[in-house]
Image (cartoon, rainbow, N blue to C red):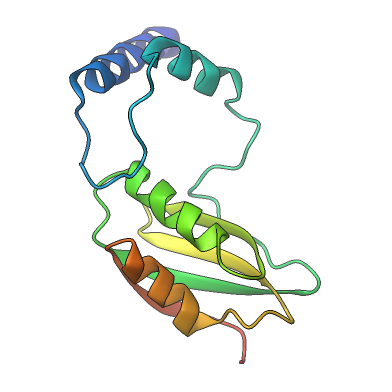
Length: 137
């Protein structure tokens, strides 16, 4: 099967799932009003952002946390967690991978946000997280 044909099948399946309202039910994102346009918009930006499976890299002046996340059912769950994490004080970036069951959070060095606050934010979204790698606090 060619890649183009496979992409077509995947696009069709996603569109049908969105129209049918199929999902894990845990995501706080409503289905798009115009699913075809939403899929086309996603395709047009493909490759312009990093994959959720790609870990963050610590930048100068930031602390990087890595967490093991439990309870996710799909990447939509990961997106919900990432959105919550990005709202924490001092968070520069947050990335969550459903396939790796991992979250990476980059925080300004002077920020009061640390492991406990990050784990609590994940818990507030209905999932469990345990810090697996963190800078000295």
